[in-house]
Length: 171
Ligand code: NI
Image (tube, rainbow, N blue to C red; front, side, top):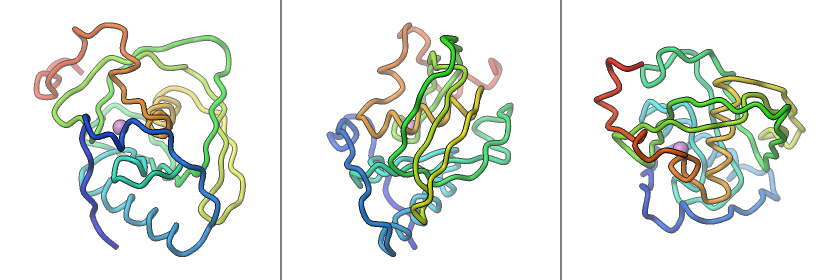
């Protein structure tokens, strides 16, 4: 059990394709536990293994209520392994995102409004969900970390990357 150091933008570990998880053992459970504790310690709603320097296709996310995202709908607390995402319909939606690897900033990012995602639970069982809105956004953001992308890579307008403190009156 540990709170891990979160790597910040510029680190090569954040720009890699992550490896699939092959063994569902105690060390995997420990990694997932550490990711949870780290995410909660930093007040995030999601965290991907590469953000703590572990090059595996594993993300955790979930929110009941968040100070960072006060208007967000609840998202079930989930450990998602070897995920796949399939957009449903063609509709895109813009929304503000932040990232624990890019402290102090927020940006407007277009995402698929509705997706189907699948993957494995920590016990190796299969998970599949159809979601939309904030839930879909969080999953797309976290899974981008597994292919070496950060949210500014998805932004269309660089002027919409601003200091977090300037968000207070805007949200
Ligand atoms: Ni992130």
